[in-house]
Length: 319
Ligand SMILES: CCCCC[C@H](S)C(=O)N[C@@H](Cc1ccccc1)C(=O)N[C@@H](C)C(=O)O
Ligand SMILES: [Ca+2]
Ligand SMILES: [Zn+2]
Image 1 (tube, helix red, strand yellow):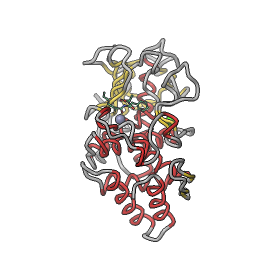
Image 2 (image 1 turned 180 degrees about the horizontal axis):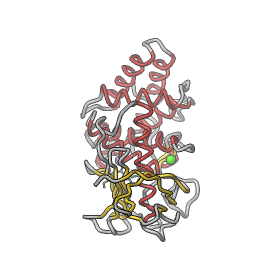
Image 3 (image 1 turned 90 degrees about the vertical axis):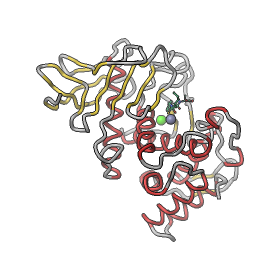
């Protein structure tokens, strides 16, 4: 039901106090954003089905702690809001389908569930067990999961082997871009939620994938059958390509240097590759070609951006 858009105060777990758009209907505030396709956030009450949209009496949500069930809802809702704004302001895309797709974010899924996932129509976040993960509602996760929706509606990269690793990397790349859009970011994935007892680690690391056990070069790719053929492992190769293209630097395995072009241009190249050129079975070689085509379209065939894109893939062993 559409009511009146209201601006609420969200006391989040990982982003401090944030401003969120809520929906006032008959004196009750709902965690629903009619200014962003009607996106809404539900509480699954630690079950794996059902759930109901969070409501509040005074439009001040959560307490910055997990003691209040609304807190995780604030983070998920805020993450969806920033993701919507990122794609709209960066690429003029209104929602993951370009047509105002209504995103549902579901929190408190299952019991101490150590994951988050996209199921084709909603994002779903577990609370973690408190040892491996804190509640998995940080900004890079929200951006990661919603980007699976974008990928599904565009390239449709098959979720296994190299196309699956590329799929996962696009989610890490844009999850990181969404995180940076909040004003502070990093090239770590899940740093706020992974192993709370261990400072400074992350689930994945784009600037140095090997720091978290993932390859930074094609010659070190995983060729086994675990993890759907290493989708969360070999994503390190493309994550390193993006990092080197954006920031510049030298690949630790090849020793080859890359001249950086900055995050926005690198993101624009990867976004155009994903939404214009890639297909379900695209492998890393195809992603190289797609990003070169995108760089040519955006900046010209002999541009510094085009040359840096080629350098970055070569530095990571994908010719
Ligand atoms: C349920 C089946 C698994 C689906 C995989 C989802 S898309 C996924 O990749 N989830 C992310 C969650 C995440 C994202 C960013 C930062 C931290 C955690 C993920 O990386 N999951 C890991 C734990 C995995 O599934 O191996
Ligand atoms: Ca991060
Ligand atoms: Zn994923």
